[in-house]
Image (tube, rainbow, N blue to C red; front, side):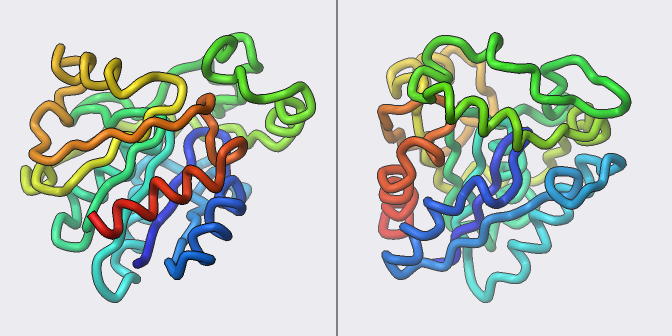
Length: 227
């Protein structure tokens, strides 16, 4: 099965190296994506540029693909389901949820000189980063790629209600499946409240399980190909 892997803010495709290796060993074809503005040196990239790159990757798959989104990129994975509902066999959302149509993609932190730099670890103290030691934190911060303003402040557009038919798996790292269900049932995640098939998978990690639990994360992703 072709599996597209989309990392969250400040990360390029190399974030998936260990997960991709584990998926290949299981006979899958992982495709880690390095998005415009997050690894190609461009600071003028927009959210539309990133959406186009994701859809190009979906279109390049001969059949259907599982599309995996991490953190903010959960919205990109969901946009793929909206734009290509017939090409996406499942969406896997890791540590995040898709925003609704008309909402800003990821303007979570201050912009500086046209980009949103990694803000340091203070906003992520607690469950988000509890499984990262000092060496891992330093390496992450050193490699973090500032997110172009045109990406962070881009507006999400969703147009095809067939996306609600695409199966979804919510992988829960720093929160529990029970918490995720509670948020969805309360209306905090309107897109998933309308989805017809939502399953949950727990993983004992912080917000970046591709770094700290890559083998287990690969197993959870692979399980969606046989569901």
